[in-house]
Image (cartoon, rainbow, N blue to C red; front, side, top):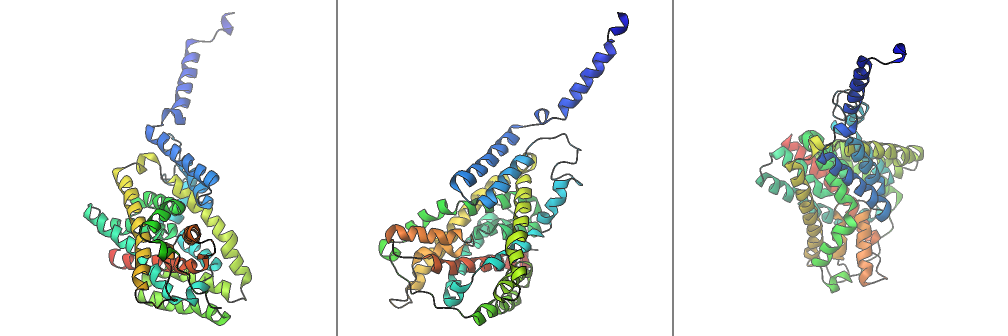
Length: 390
């Protein structure tokens, strides 16, 4: 009978093992911050599924936030900030700015620039909307951020997630998680944020303006656009080559008509893979122990402000521009919001708000002009900031 009894040392051993096991579980390492961030991830996923707000972005980011905020015992090489971990290796594409140019390649391969080519003056709306970037930059400087950080924060106003990641990877790597999540959050909330601003700065008569149908664009014009575009923009802002070069290259693949397979790959499997990786790793980078700081909170506030200013600047610029246009050639100010580069959501918002006042007034095709101009504009703005802040 004595041989069947376990010794006290055995119970101590089992107790120590159980204690050690518990120390390695998330239950022993979680904080209130982790729970808060997991709740944010669940909100992102809910908005994506229930409201269908940018589901291709919010589901990977939301799930990434959950992954990044499951607490763990330090040194296990599972966290995104631990050298050698799988997440850390995948995050290199964000940290070193590899993913954004690939996203721009796919955007170029799926974008039709016809509306912009048909009415080149719409490019000015895309340029005007970038005022939000520089307004946020100035305010961030006033609040005490250093110039590089302020530039990275300001780019949120362009509503362009890949550009925000690219610029912050170069100027403010420590703030990249907050900047990227902020940029993508406001991109997803375009249908919520922009309509009140559009209504605030327009009257009923302006909302009913009808624009002339876009003219037909020849194949030659479509092919020449990316070639002329890369030369003009990158001679002006060489620092924009990684983004603008890939954007116009992708568009040439699409419009040339002889590289359909390459265009389909860039606009399909390639951009899908990179979107998954960039969304998941950006979400995981919001680890509560490094993410929840006063700087992160102010970044979200400044991001909202820059987005408001960018939308208002686009709308107000159209109103100002209309003063110099003859009757019949005027532009509906409701497409001014599309100057931010959230393609094609901000153009859809122009259409939706416009049809609230006239069901037969179709603004979508017109709004796509400043919308794609905004993509170019945000990349140019990023190149300008990078040229004098890096």
